[in-house]
Amino acid sequence: MYAIVATGGKQYKAEKDQVIKVEKIKAEVGETVDLQALMLVDGDKVIVGEAANSVSVKAEVVAQDKDKKVVIFKYKSKKNERKRQGHRQPYTALKIKEITA
Image (spheres, one colour):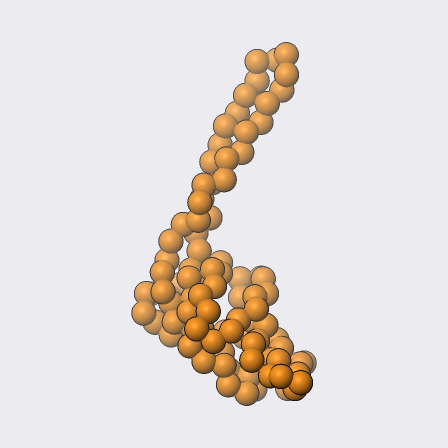
């Protein structure tokens, strides 16, 4: 059984006891959050659309952290123009506790 959940403007496939990295959520480590389910697949049974509003996906916040650094390097040849910049995207690690229909 798995569900497709939406959070932070993105969609994720969530299975029980799986840890997923999502866009940062304002929640403390150890808190339980509810995620909006868009679809539920249970064997041959698929729940989509208005019926998916009754699906409950509960997840526990495992960590609030930053991802690995991404280096942005801009370079123009023969102009002695170089610009180096880095970025670390904050994320929230969620452990899926239960999926109920």
